[in-house]
Length: 460
Image 1 (cartoon, one colour):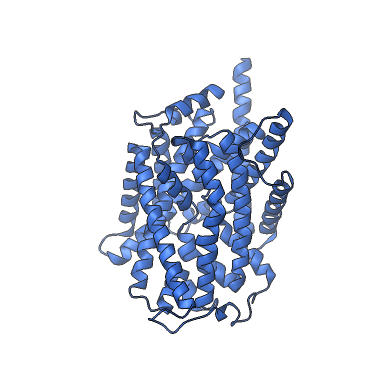
Image 2: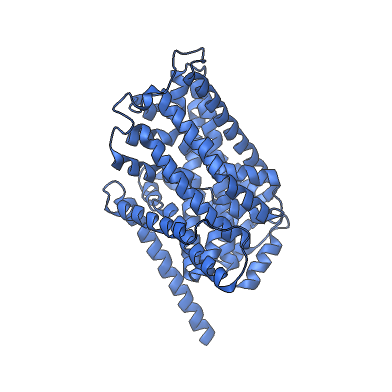
């Protein structure tokens, strides 16, 4: 197993530049969920959704710190899956690696379909399914050529998203201070005007955490991408240290401005999305077109990252003997071509199922991803707990350490377990939680069967 990992590290090329990795780390936490999905979160908790975002941001910050500690000690494209194998056991790495791959190959068609729907609205003569397949075809092609292409696409995608959010914050700040000339809107009174800051009670704040946590999923991608750049430890350290600022600026600042300028129960929020509704209230010309363009970039970026991430995780599983051996094949350009192709085909299959059986089979498959993000975070925390204890026992120095170990690590583990328990007993989330549990149990059984098969082969 170790020799396979060494071969993997020698095979993958350092094709990503420092600025590309920096932008990938930013892009990982800015998806369409911020621009559109945040409206559902606001409608659930009201202005108190800021507390939900703060709580979720803190959880992600702690998880990234733990992951950063392990990733700097051992940069690896398998990231938390590899660390789970070392800390908990091969079955854990197998299970969480395949769950993560499953999550992203289902997100790929979701993002492609969302992008296709936007394009179809402007070009109704072209069927939506054709746009979806063209988007997937183009991005899979760029991923197959070289990792540099993925880095270049993701750099510009991320830059557009960052510029859009910064511009949004600037415009909204002018409006809050009464300097926006196109609308008579000022102040932050909407934070408490419609039923108070917490109109639906603290329970909805916890419910808001369940909605917002999936908006942050993707921050961990930088620990996977860093393995394909020079000086990966420096890139991981920098990305980990800057997570708190990115969460504060991109999420807390923008959502604060949204709930300050638009009533939380404004029906337009859920109808058109939070960012577009704010721009409409401020009478910004072409608000819909602007937001559609940014969302199109966001979903395309997410699909691009999803394809890259799924292929690298599949490749890492293959390198550890936990997937078909052909998945570890590398092209002359340093791309795991088979892993990219298989991940793309899985995405195409999801897209096809969605159009052939609309709202049925694909919705069922997507429900299996409901709690995967929390399971990934839980495995990261448990892995860090065990690996850090092992390092401390052996007296090995670590370049980056988790704060207040082991207390904060245990706090994260306890919090995630409580959230998963809440999801299991909540009518709104029970089905998705049980579906995720079912897929997880199936993958664990496959892992144990594979292990038993190896044991039999070795004794034969």
